[in-house]
Image (tube, rainbow, N blue to C red):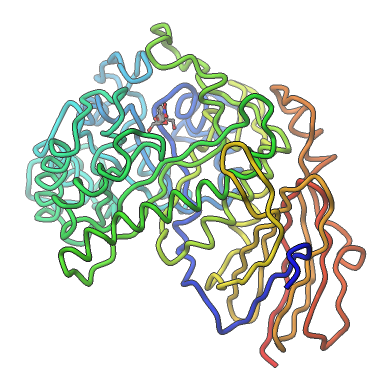
Length: 511
Ligand SMILES: O=[N+]([O-])c1ccc(O[C@@H]2O[C@@H](CO)[C@H](O)[C@H]2O)cc1
């Protein structure tokens, strides 16, 4: 078979697994303006009776976010949750060491969980295993999920919330392998603590799902060994292991940046291998799945000065408010293609983060809220990807990249639910590519298509730039002009613009 052609083979009977709705999660940390002047801003013209911005909540709904992780991130590793419940006027500010910011504690567990509930979002909570341990983790779980008649559940009730929140997903700390983490631990120290905290938490509520901390990135020196050691302590207890990954364009190396999805794919394969190796040695039939609870484009190496170089600030400072381009949006779309192709092992993922902090949604205090270019591929994928992810066979030339070696020129993912098909395709090459979709006798009808094309201009802060990128690089396209295939034929052809991400929606019915 020639490799100069790109061919995607799909059939309704070949599936990877069900797409868990939690794959379209996001993340709100007490960091910069994610909470204050992000989701929460009393006095804003759109704010509700609880002081939360309606404009941001509406964009969050449009984004299609299903799950939100809270309250951190690095922040959680020095957080005292008890200081942010009860009467707001009695709460005291504290100096958050993770981001060197004075945290006013105006939004805490109740405010967040009630916001999530009002917005139809499933919360995902993290406990502090940096400066704290088993006792505080158990107390927080009891506060959230306990029935009346015990100390912490009764405190919640006294604070005005009778019904337990029933929070299902719990992260056992955050990035405990990272030297930057407050209360950083080695794998043995963390593994033991996670096991002890998790076991105690399951005694409070056996229905919860637990996430053990995996590596902060594939580049960590301890990567692999960390997963193995942590799971030796926690394999029988936890449901998921976390993965975090941020990608960026370094030194103008566009090809490597566009190939980020392949780096993410390899990272997932390696974590699955490390995890399954522990299971194999234990002769366990249990499969640990992945909570990819931080992923995004983040100009971490090139624009972020490092936590230790941040001055001590207060009043919701602007920290890591990355501004995104059309190129960044193409990469975000492609990272979602990778996640969908691993639907069998990745049921939970969080775009880090939701508002203002490396986020698809931006706000001005007292002003408007707007969509960054990365908003569009996420919202479209969250809306269209339903049912089962299809097990595609993709034949495509490779591109040579400095950072990842050979990467596929075209990547593809597809989902199918009751005959409704969605296809997601990325063309990483600087040339247009004609893709042959071979559907093996099944009938494919494409009704609507959207594409995001990469730009070459530097991203500029503010809504005008975001709107300009959306106007020039994003939108639906004329399906008849780009997709062809005679009725009843076994193949359909679609043309992908250079450096682009495309979504197609239609029907796929067996012959
Ligand atoms: O690779 N690094 O140098 C690196 C440094 C910090 C880092 O922090 C993570 O990303 C932050 C922003 O989402 C979250 O609070 C934290 O969990 C994640 C990775």
